[in-house]
Length: 242
Image 1: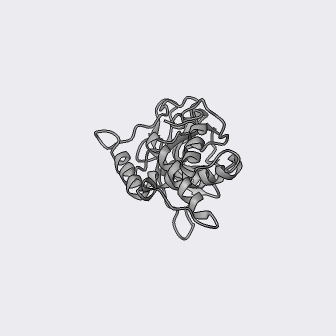
Image 2: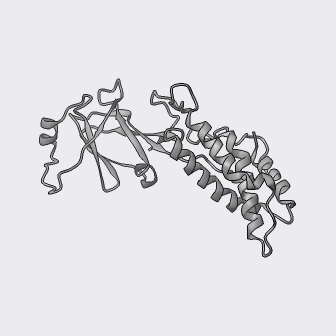
Image 3: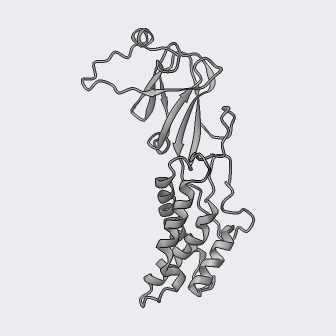
């Protein structure tokens, strides 16, 4: 519904300011803060809406695969193409508390396999550690699905891309029902930050109720309650390759 410039223009309309009295430099941090807050609220009511895949190649006989912490600790689930044909989900495996479980190759392949239900993983020192059968070279063999918040605008003069449209295949856009709410909340913050606070409009006083309504609506964004995420499922380079 809004481009970055359109969002900035709406905020200035709500605040009664101009690009001189409320500069882009002053506005952008407020937009980012509100953007993140609303993104977290959206994620809370619809856990799958901001899911993104990250890929890594399987390497023959390699058990440990490092991922950036910002991805690893936002992981939702993990898949692997152990047979170089079909992705299967991997179950999380909790290492015993006494840490006496052997992690040598012979022990692992004797207790685990490259099939669903028998292929597992754990997280060790910022890495995925695989408990499976023998590992061979597979391009994009690991597919880690993780939560990635929608990309906030960085240039408030940009007037081409609708903020709902993902900036790239590795990023999400912000659902359009929240664009005006972001502008409204930035206006509320700006007005209440003044040395002499400015009275809120009737529309601004309605913010919490309207935000709750928008969150309720996005909780059920299709008939079966599942969220359709705009990423491919074939291992092509549409995610974050590592």
